[in-house]
Image 1 (tube, rainbow, N blue to C red):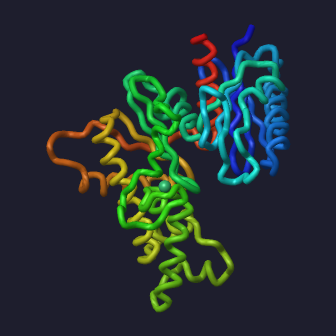
Image 2: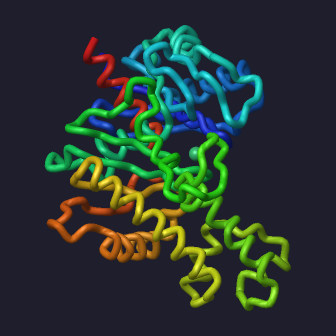
Amino acid sequence: MSNYFIGIDLGGTNIKAGVVSEKGKLIAKASVATGSTPSQIVQQMIQVAHQAAKDGNVGMHDIEAVGIASPGPLSTTEGIVLRSANLPDWHNVPLRDLVSQSLHRPAFLENDAKSAAYGEFTAGVGADENITNFILLTLGTGVGGGIIYHGRLIRGVSDSAAEIGHSIIEPNGDVCGCGQRGCLELYASASRTGRYAQHLLDTTPSRASSLRVLVAAGTRIGAREVAEHAQMGDELANEVWDRACRYLALACVNAARWLDPQMLALAGGMAGAGDFLLDRVKRHFINLNWKMSETQMQIVLATLGNDAGIIGAAALARDAAHQR
Ligand SMILES: [Zn+2]
């Protein structure tokens, strides 16, 4: 009987695959460091899929379908990844069909952040029958997003819905890699939070900060260091953390106005700070949010961690396979 699905999460650092049950339970997973060429990467995806199946004691013939979570831009209908930010020779790669042909299983392609959102919605923090409208924000190198509206993942007409990280929140702000100015991810991603702290340390050399000890020791300042030192009472780190949280709260207000969902979950590197992120975002949210009526949207932390993409991709493959 085919009651299992494989989710493959193609990340910039690691390629992960997991065997997932019909109900969204992760049975086994495997991972490998991401290679450098498209053909190498496709081969690795096949290898980790086989490894996960082996570790889960599930034969490939018991796998009903395979879901692939990949960074975009991509086309879900054609199953093609158009470009990659990390791989210069990655152009129009028919990833879905390459994986499907090698594994002899139907495969489906989806954006990584959307897959993670679907994972959290179906098997994570949003897995509750009362939650039908749900948003996930992943705060990592960039800011990714996924929107579920009445139980369905929103893709838009060109698979670029929910690119929340490229919402403009500072019209005169910095130029983003996407060509716009002032995108959310320039102000509220984990990597940018670390970079802003470094910027303040560099441009205000007379300002005291416990982060300077780390810099002197050769440590690169990331969101984790900022959060830790802000919690220890460092004023500069606190200013940086607070700024990122305020921008996130601003995005949350806009999300509430656009969709009025029951829940918005925060995931990714920044969410590693736990309640220190959540409480601060909520505090700013209350200040920034309208006073016209009560906002139902709960702001929460995601619960699946790095497995959200695997579980979501598998769930999307399940739903797509059952629809056919
Ligand atoms: Zn942008």
